Image 1 (cartoon, rainbow, N blue to C red):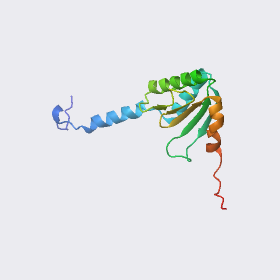
Image 2 (image 1 turned 90 degrees about the vertical axis):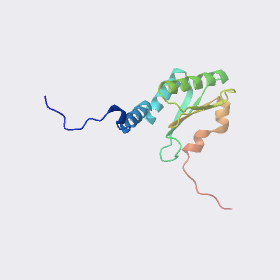
Image 3 (image 1 turned 60 degrees about the horizontal axis):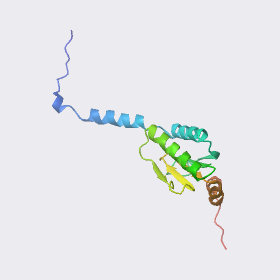
Image 4 (image 1 turned 180 degrees about the vertical axis):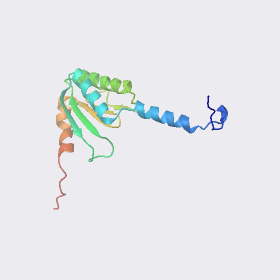
Amino acid sequence: MSKSVLPKVPKKTAPKTTRKTSTHAAALKAQPDADKTLNMILSRLADMKAEETVTIDLRGKSAFSDYMIVTTGRANRHVGAIAENVAKGLKETGIKSIHVEGLPNCDWVLIDSGDVIVHVFRPEVREFYNLERLWTQGPTAAKTI
């Protein structure tokens, strides 16, 4: 057997960078990328029979998110059930920082997972706010009067 030329390092004085690196790698592995998150959300929306689902690519348009999904539920209960199902799926995939707003009323529920933002509307509320128009129109020059 050959002997190691490297000096033995006692376990107490072993460099701690090895642990940080492995923890960092595990954290990166636990966070799914934006496309995987998008596909999981779209799958959940289809399973819950969400209607008129539109995906808007925000890459290059916005610094706060990569994708925005706008969808509709038939009634308040349907909107709430869709939102809860999507939030549950996000937690199951390892996304820790999920922010949900609007669940008490279920007219418009916003789910922010960081890379993907989901808006679940009742039909009347979606028509009123018309978010798709805001994010899909090209930039226009300001008019001077």
